[in-house]
Image (cartoon, rainbow, N blue to C red; front, side):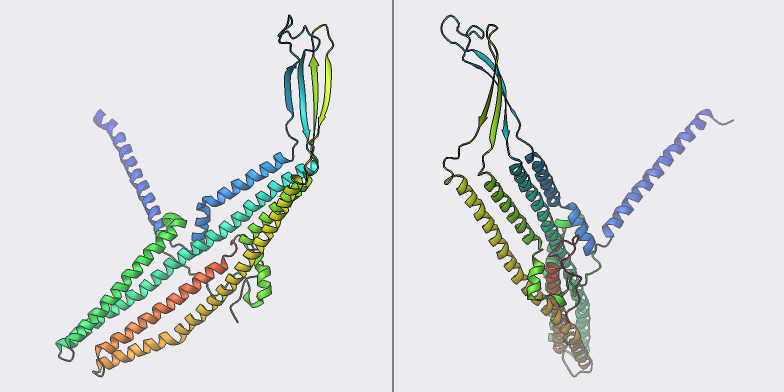
Length: 447
């Protein structure tokens, strides 16, 4: 017959083992998911989406727009009525002093006062806040474009730093082989110790350049981390096509570029500021007609006397209109002209910068293609020829090292040109937020 205590302890031990297994399984699942999340590659589009989702600036602009909309609703309403309560003609001397009912002139007063703001003035005040809301949304578009652009620049900086590091890693392996070859020929009596030292110097130069590139890579990762957080440590993939833009260069001449940039977020913000200034000028014009205030009072006297009602109207007297209302209107109209001029100047600035950037982007692409099509293949052929001559005893190790050094320089220069073109591409391609349609169609390559 089984022991009773043993029979009771088995289920409890089984439950504990199952709980332990479940806990270990959960820990492994969480760890594996975290490992997958860390190792998951990060594309440029994903990085930009993550940067937009993490941004608190965009949330702040939404809050600002909502606040202005609420103020616009409030501005359409009449001012709150004013309750007036008081005592008139209270005696303070004589036998009736401080009596509220003995003297026939003593009255307890209750009244309402209402300012009658004209409907057109209330409408203009509301429109002014609505323009503020529009400006906050335009600021959000500007910030979205800047976030996408800066994220793209940080992503591309890290991408090309890694690409350059890969070139140096490949060349470092070749440099180590060159050292082994120089040492072998030196031991065989066909080479000199100077060749061995030259090969080692070449390896040291590559290591020094790799150290500099590693610093640039770390800084690029830090800049990307500012936008995407811990995801900046993930591997990158999916280099964008930097030979195409979101607008059509083939149909974009100097005149149409200006019309295109009118919709630029920074220009749009200044356009909203101009609308705000115009709304304030319209309101100043409406203020030339004063608002009336109506007041009704009920006056209660002692029981021996009758109660009374008083009605009054208050009208501001614009006795110095030339130096008050007219001056205010002139100031607001000057602010409108100021906003127009600032917008026009900003448009000219962006037009010049964009035209120059397009030229630089096209030039960098053409030079990069020349490197890939002509210069790098020639450098590779020269390196192969130098190596063959060295193996045949017709050239020294210095010729081989010089050819490989030139090849490294050309490969890095080609990557630098491509990185420069990618930076110009980021500035041009994200003049506008990706969530908004461009004023023109998707671009084609330069003809």
